[in-house]
Length: 207
Image 1 (cartoon, rainbow, N blue to C red):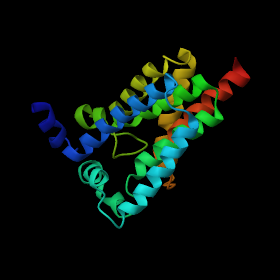
Image 2: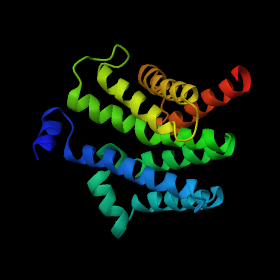
Image 3: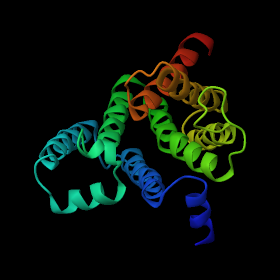
């Protein structure tokens, strides 16, 4: 309870906290299903199509289970635009990574997607003291934590050099491309593609 109050006092509400935790939990579950070959890219594509349909239906109807998640975990600005937008882009980014990159690089890219942004946000809000020179709404401590944690977990699939490079570029792309240039692309799509492309180029041209 003390830690929860600390999050709230530092500017992150319960819904946003729950959204970040849910992002990590769903991401880990999905990653394990992919790693153990319990779902294929085709099944992920079917899930993506179903999620789009449910999202569009949610604009007009209150679907029982879907509405529960939207009310408790969705940002208010996304509810009337494209419900579940972040998760749709996460599925799309993961699917593209699996199609574009070699398996281990794709898995590392998805891992970076799972941990980089939520860790950066939560650690930045809870422990952040130094404003980022790239985006003054975020903290250097958060960026460092997102980079370190995502790099660590990416090591399960790729070498340290690839894990570090992929995580670093993913965090930079999230801040520079999305925050400064204000390009309207979701970080859940950008992060796995930026990380995967970086690791692929290093393998092709430097190793």
